[in-house]
Image 1 (cartoon, helix red, strand yellow):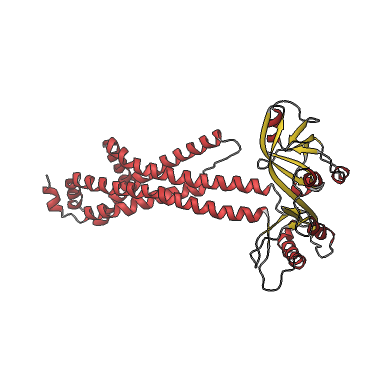
Image 2 (cartoon, rainbow, N blue to C red; image 1 turned 180 degrees about the vertical axis):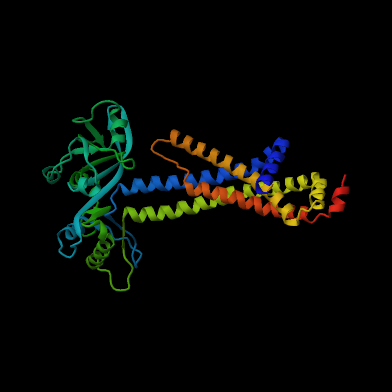
Length: 400
């Protein structure tokens, strides 16, 4: 019985090709939009997660924020030294102060705005970066405020194009720095220049507090154990509150965060945006479902005599309902299948055109599409099928 109904449904679609195509089109567009948007959202989420996790999931970043008084109290080199030397942070094995700013870097006729960071020799270890070419600066060069620089891959390409940057002199705010290394590619932080923190303070920006302490933008601390990052953060925050004189009940005038914190925040935002776009795309599915109902009503009108004949020869109301429900579901499933194929093609196209970005249509999205298609077929097919089942066989046989 089920196979017979399925065969009749397919025959009906083949008989009215154009009508079936227009009916299925609305479902196809809706399913393709929903699946592709969900896949794009997941792709963006995976990409961002990968990029930020490359910063190190056990690297804790400390920045200054306004406290209870509303005043911003800057982080200082002296604070970083205290955190590095104290025995109150057994879960922290590295501490590094960092200063940064955007400056114009120039070589020959090329000039670009880049992020310049002043760091210590702990930078490669705490940030997980290495020099693909050349070397990183030494402690002796930090102590002497040497005007040496390690540049990112993007900066190297912008300033030197195809030339070898090693040993070349670049100008940053009219100060000459010799390039001694090129960092490995990270995907997120390649347009930058790394110099000794002492050289940054001596040559580019010597900001100090009112008490004469060197101001730093960020302090980076590395948890010794990746499985105890949260405990290390708690320990670090306690010491920071003590060192910065924050009383019980007062709000912190600093903020600690890790790559995982950023990823969680961005993931939540991306999921909300993806859900919203999915809902908007889903509206077309409702329109497609209404079109299915409309076509089913037309089909029932055309097949009124057939319905009467079926009922006169013993068909029950449930048989009639099943017949037309199957036809509605078949139409929506075909639309859903074509929509999934379009979504897969779109995902493949985006992956091909956008470098380092992968969009994959997951099995869960395909199953969701199939489920939605079936539900739409059932939901919007119930009323026409029920109406067909309620027809009086005598009136149906007399229908012209």
